[in-house]
Image (cartoon, rainbow, N blue to C red; front, side, top):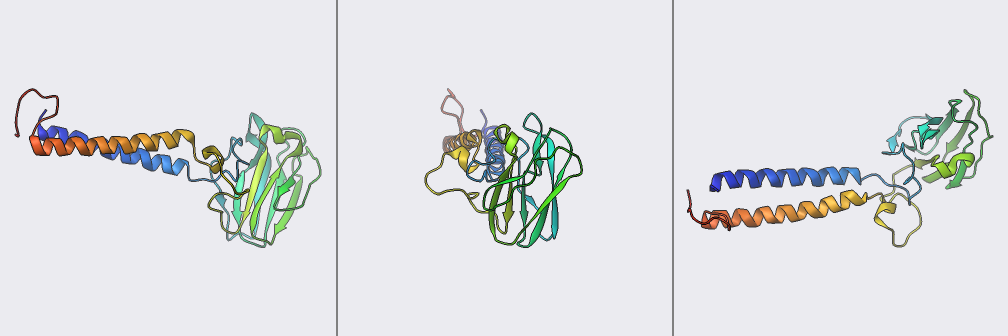
Length: 205
């Protein structure tokens, strides 16, 4: 193998590995709030609604195998913001019940157009759910103020998936580091000796 061709391939491999690492980092950046949203299929990010005086969350959006979701599942608001939950009329009867960070419970309703609101004055993470469909993953979060680095929840050791780190992304990161190290070692060998370790002949071009 010629030195120029090898270095071109090694450089491309390193760039691809770096891109994979960046992708893995992006995928694992969003918190799961102590695992509270780990089984919520329509949760992908905390939607930034800071600056708004009133924010709407739909009740009964498509998620978790039916119309069993809050949309969006997680929102970030400023202290003093009013969150209004509006029923879509899909998925049967729903309600909004505080799990932690608040103390509220709406009526159990199935009619479209029904709404329920809460104003959040204190900073923190408010976890809530729909009582009939909690086991299906109909849960949500209101972040009042800054998003916690580890997404809230109790302290202590956590599994990777509980901290919002996808297991697949974790292994991709490890494999990427190994690929970069191998590329560096082979590049050094080619620069020094002008051939690959498996080449039977040839010198520097």
